[in-house]
Image 1 (tube, helix red, strand yellow):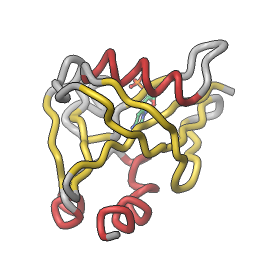
Image 2 (image 1 turned 30 degrees about the vertical axis):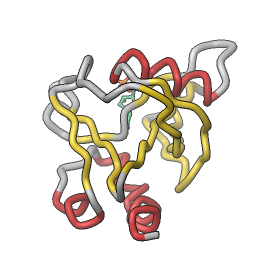
Image 3 (image 1 turned 45 degrees about the vertical axis):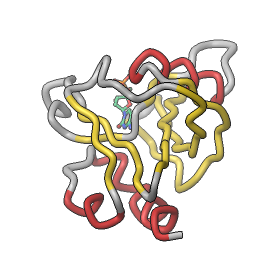
Length: 127
Ligand code: DCM
């Protein structure tokens, strides 16, 4: 079973979403940025690597929230709240980035899997 990590970065009552470029069926839809854990990595290390590669930022921590999501038969994905340590996010691997508040989150065309985290994200944006 492979593991995918997805990171939620919060700032000023908003969470950072990224717009996918691939595969074609997911292109244009929005997600929490992340990717697969590589052998020997912890979830926190994978998040730090993926967000460095994709956004050019340094993050730390990995505070899991919401339910795990099964992706097909051999991948499971979990969401983590991470702390932004340095850098300003840039879309190095995405079509665009957007900081959304609780209200804007409802309007975003999220990839299906990430919708499982909407209730938890709403709570964190409200609180
Ligand atoms: N994925 C997802 N939601 C995310 C991140 C990833 O549904 N927030 C899925 C898309 C792919 C798999 O995880 O099926 C691997 O992600 P990637 O293609 O970004 O490496």
